[in-house]
Image (cartoon, rainbow, N blue to C red; front, side, top):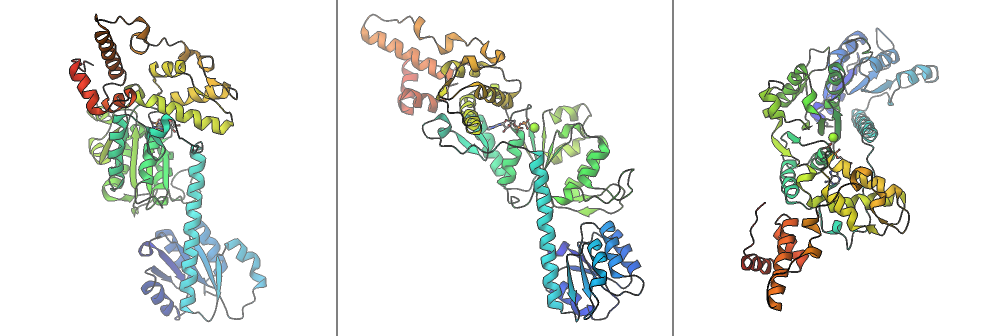
Length: 485
Ligand SMILES: Nc1ncnc2c1ncn2[C@@H]1O[C@H](COP(=O)(O)OP(=O)(O)O)[C@@H](O)[C@H]1O
Ligand SMILES: [Mg+2]
């Protein structure tokens, strides 16, 4: 927690406090408010965002323990410290102290250095529990399967690229991930667009974990299917009484994630009113809780995702243009899986390993017939659909088996692969009179077939055919092959 933003409230009618205040302000850089009556203290807790309250045992107008109990309601996130008399009677206050949920007490005479140290520890504890709350929430929200960590030697997965949990070999994904890595290093908002299941959320996480905010929280909020008021109070917070049911103040995720990243999924679904509030956050770095007149500063990096094209929504007047421009500091479009079929085999293998590890089944591999079918599916549900299919197959397979067509769902097993491109060899008519001409005709055919199948990715074709890149280029030239797709 940055000290400059930390606000302490000292409640005391005692002059000794000026020394304590100067230590807290000068050595620790905290902002210190002093209230000399309980009444003034409580009104301050309603106005300012207090992080810690330190209260003298005897005040003129009210018992300190009662004041601290009331602070639990007026500023529930503030830590509470009690200053006791040198020889006060502890026992009789035990119940009240419990109710006030005091973090620590200090006994008089006050030692300013000791107060400084206890305050610092209290704030560290508050920060730790705040992060713990956020992480627990995060884990509940994103009940991700464990990361695959098995041995990957000798498989397609061993040759693929990784960006955190994203697995890919296609050039389009490689390019996108390079941009994403660059974007991660900046503080600009990022808009990730793409069909459902293409890996937008995985990309957002990868960006957060590659940014300098990685020690602070990543908070995920889906903006679809939630009322405007709920979304507003969830993200911007609310004050007690702001609406029926708002029984206490709520900090809001933006302020809770201060220093971190907030991932807003399905951003296309937010209301015009919410768009205005979000614009203020992106432009001024300020949030205003529901029912409050105060704008609070907060430093969060926004990553949004949408499976609807925001530019089209702007054109139709369904989304504010100014907000759209602000959100797309970087605009990343994750291509659908059918447009990067190179990724299918590595993803299939990756998911097979992931689920065999989870279920403890030992499989021999994936049969070619299965890979063929997987290659030819249109994938309206993208990677998620592929993952579900593989997960299902692994669940049906037994130890020592290959994944075969009989493990596939009807939807996939009924696909008839395109024979002309993948299985042309048996019907091949070989031109040429001499053996040399026949061999050349066959060679031309094989090179052409591999080029077409691998979408003219010459590195891959060269690798598959055991040629150097130059060797492959020579053959393309010799046989006058051209990319006609
Ligand atoms: N490139 C990838 N590598 C590994 N897993 C992926 C990849 N892309 C997507 N997934 C998996 O597919 C599923 C859907 O991804 P997700 O990020 O939720 O997509 P989206 O947010 O675009 O709907 C998740 O289980 C995710 O782990
Ligand atoms: Mg998603």
